[in-house]
Image 1 (cartoon, rainbow, N blue to C red):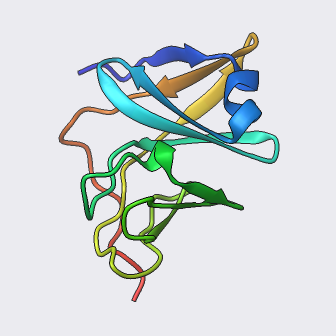
Image 2: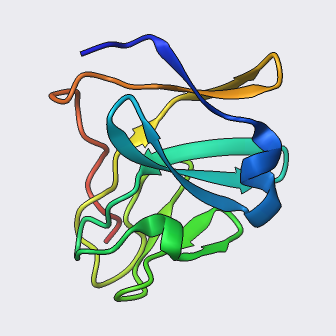
Length: 116
């Protein structure tokens, strides 16, 4: 699996709605605009069959549209019930007017456990 930076979208595409679901390197990724920054997580909730890009962005937290659990888009941390497993995050950079996402190998370390 590659660890190179993959071109995803133009930053203004994410900033228009605050959340955008995109396919990057064969993976379903959610991009979030928080202030001047853009963050990326896997687009699948760890608790149920829901796409996070269909959820609600509240500051730097994404609320799952299915069970209203929230994740930090910065760290992937599961912040409240019913979530118990964190969501995977991906490094993002903006360069030459484009958003790039760095995909780690599938067996890369998972984020820390959920907050108690």
